[in-house]
Image (tube, rainbow over all chains, first blue to last red; front, side, top):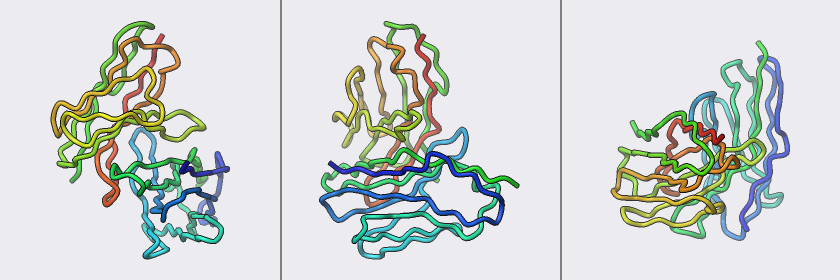
Length: 114
Length: 111
């Protein structure tokens, strides 16, 4: 079945460091891929979205590129700020159903030290 | 602004008791979803709905029922709550062509 793998449970960085969060996915369909971000006390919210049509998403300084060959969808940011501290989820959209189901990875807690 | 609200925000229940979690959306989305969030598992889908009157099982439906009486409202029902259902529950609305909008969550503790 469709699945997403995030191996990094927690990443701790200093302000202005480079961020890289790994994500790989498995699906038999052409994927729609998302990164969602969850701040403390809130529900997840969409950070960026990528489809096979555009391959790359950019939002709020974050960037993710979909690589069909390696089935990867890593999240990057050149210079993190303390306000980026949150949980980041790699998410696969299930186009095999009309329901628009999402498959979430386990999440990566980002802690940015000022 | 899209809006999904949940009530209650916090709930303490006793084992064997009945718990109802409520969700309301003003987005006019056809699809609604209930997830639970546990450390190491991300969000897992419990039940979902295509529209008023419909409910479908997600990936972990055992021990849960759902009800969609209207376009705006979607409830999650635990008929006989157990400690293993202690978790944070999120409701969402949307579909694959637009983002899913999540509510703020309900923290449920079953003693």
